[in-house]
Image (cartoon, rainbow, N blue to C red; front, side):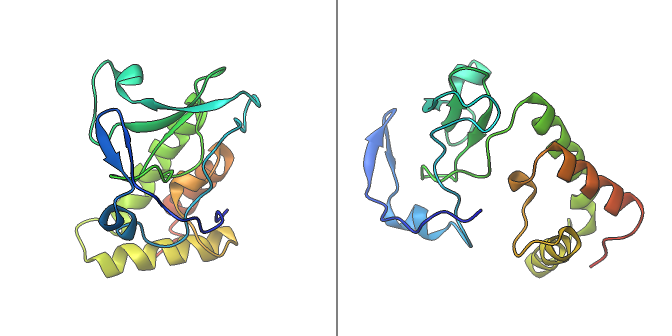
Length: 154
């Protein structure tokens, strides 16, 4: 899932400076490739301001959205680096359910616990690195079952 390492050059978009070195440096671990084709409908993906989705800006406004089906993914603050993979409505719903089941395992503890929880999740899912924003709806349902059964502990 990791994208090629690319050089991040600052530029202006929607009245904001994107990819300043300090913002890019805050992005930890592997980064995903910028989507140009939708994984659901094969439509073209373009960068939009999230006000087009929500009616007003929320947080860092850069979002990738499929022009055909509307699947979307936000970006790391200050950058154009995707937070995860494109998500249609079913995937968005499944990711919210996965977070609701998974986050109590580490929330309210130290950052170390969060990192350990994601390492345990990666082992349980049989992948090298894991983040809920990288998984599809079926994988998110598997996360919910793992958490509810006690099969994922830190």
